[in-house]
Each structure stands twice: as structure tokens, then as C-alpha cells.
Image (tube, rainbow, N blue to C red; front, side, top):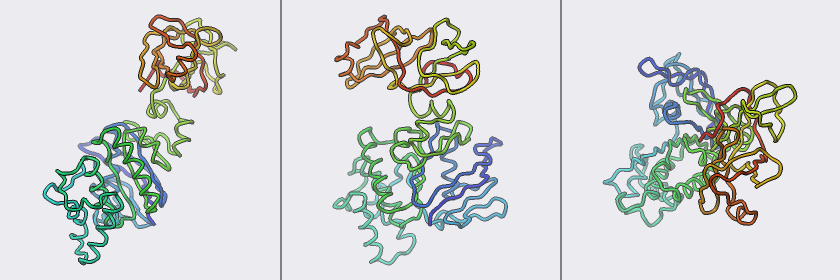
Length: 362
């Protein structure tokens, strides 16, 4: 069993609290992703789970065993916690070949030669590096070096795999390839993965569940990727999961208007009370037309990006982004240029109370 329970965890550096009374549960066999901006404390949390840092308060339990307890002083060393760790910088030994890099944890554990060779070969095979055992890291691509680090973390057959931004140093194509392979490995081995990242795309694609952490180290929402993306709990979560547009909407009696203008709101009706609201939507939620129904807008920028056309549109003084497939723009005469008037419809809207500042956020 490799369920993880974190209760009331706190950690400070130089009098500054990075994490405070944080609680979180990871289920056995799931891929759990912690998503947050740089500097929010997600790596600190991973290091506390790994045993590389000592908590100031709270407890960490793995598989029902307390591995860190600030109150009692329990602190199980990292190598006794039954886990593997992969960092973003690979940390492979440059003077060791693939086989020796991968087998290193087994050598430290004084594993017998036969078992060491069998388990190392199995780990190398698992990450697709068979035939490259004799190569040095300098003879490998970045993606292959990352596979070496992953194999080294798996060779000890851990119950928990901790991944700290492991794909950051790879190019876009390799990142996409490796994220699918990590998910496939997790399903094949049935191990628990705790993955921390600031990359929304990776988090959404590999997680069984994810948590969004804000810049103050506070968990804002936890749930399945589809749930968090489609039903964000607040504007921060909505912003952090991709490009977000916000239109300020005010209620005056039974009428709705955009911000402080006299332009009437035309679109999905709010499901929240209050005089000031924010309509949140993605660029892909925008439906454009040259005339007819919809919010009146003016195109301020048009960018052809190959598969899609990206527009910056002014709606009653608020700038929003719209993204349409290029083939749709061509087929429906929606290739606008700067200064063109347009009509803006919305396929779906997330409503938030209060004024989020309006405009677009990335």
C-alpha cells in the first residue's frame, strides 16, 4: 500500500511560512498532480514527503506508517521510505554508463549481483533503453537521460514515485512523448505517483486527481482533471488552468450590462446573485460572427497561427482573446483584420462573484 496522508504540515524558512497547516491525501495506485506557480511551495512539499526536509509541524504517513511527525520527532530517512525520486535536472552520473547509473541504488543497498543485474535489466527495458546500457550520458539525448533517471528511480521497486518537474528541460515533442509514457508506466506498475509541476497541460493529461496551489502555498481546489477544469472553484483556479477571459458584468434591476458601460449583456444567464459579477470563458468558447446576435466587438489584433486564428477583441473597453480553427474562418468568412467590427457569442460561461479585474489572463 502506498497511500499518502499529509496532516497539518507546516514549513518555514527564515521566519517566512512556505506551507502552513496543509493537509492532503493521495490514494494508493493513483497519479496525483500538484499544480502551482513557481515559488508556491510545491517542491518543498515533495521534499517533505521524500524526507529531504524536516517539517516544523504536522505529519506525513506512507502506507499507514508515520514517516515524519514534528510533535514526536519521528523522521524516517529517505532511503527507508520505499520511494523513488526524479528531479528536473536528471542528476545522472556523467562518468557512469546507463547500466551503472540505473543500478546505483541497488549497489548502495548491497543487492546481490544476480538480483542487481536482473532488476537493472528490467528497469532499463521498462523505459525503452534496452541496447543502450553501455552508453554514457553524454552519448544520450535529453529524453534518453530523463529515461535513465526514471529507470533509476524505479529499479528499487518503490511503492511511491515522486516527480519534481521532470520534463522541464525537454523540448515540446519530448515532453509530450514522456508524459504519456509516465502515465503508461504508472498504469502498468500500479504504483502511486506524486507529480509536482507548473505546467497545466502536463497536469491535466496525466493526473487521476490534481490539486491547484496558489502562490501562498494554499490548496485552492482538488479533484479530477475534468472536474477542476470544467468547474473551477474560483477565479485563481480558472486563470491557472489556461488562457482565461473575464468580462465584468453588473446587474441593474433585471438588466445586465458589461462593466460600467451601457452595452447590454447578451449571453448565458448568470447562476449567481450579486450586483457585480465576472463572466469567465476560454478563447475556444468564443463564437464569432460578422453581424447578427451577440456582444458588439472590435478586432484589435488578428494573428494567423496555422491551425487556428487568434483574435484580440475589444468589448466595451475590455480586451478578450478568441481562438477559431483556421478552416472554420475560411469557410465562414471569419478572417477579420484589425479594426473590423464583429459579434461575439459565448458557448459557455463560468460565473464568479465580484470584479476579477476583467480582460484576459494567462
